[in-house]
Length: 143
Image (cartoon, rainbow, N blue to C red; front, side, top):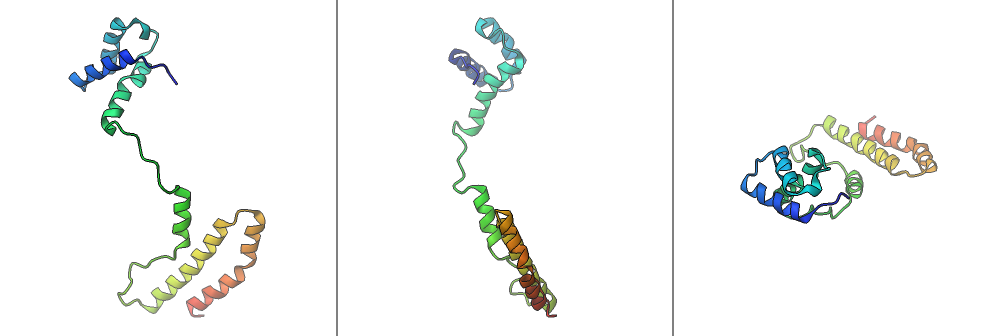
């Protein structure tokens, strides 16, 4: 990690407190004349180390981002395992809508099993049971 000089950081905080819209180039020129140790930095490096960090802390309220309580992958797996909800629930669905939802549910279960197969052998097992899903789809479609 790049070295941050506390004295420079304090100065930049004070300057941005006085004028939050101060340009980095302007701040850099003034800081370079006041603190010779930052002379080797470019304007871009100066901005990344000092003004940007001050602005980030100010916008975040001084806190850090919270960690997710549940990893995203686990959340997705749970969502995929749940049966699909219908938006038209309780509104008197037609037979076509009901069979369409039933077929969709069977295909979603098939896709979920396929997605959760970790090894090639597991994928082959799921595909070998495709006849079972075809039977369910035909039954759901009313054929």
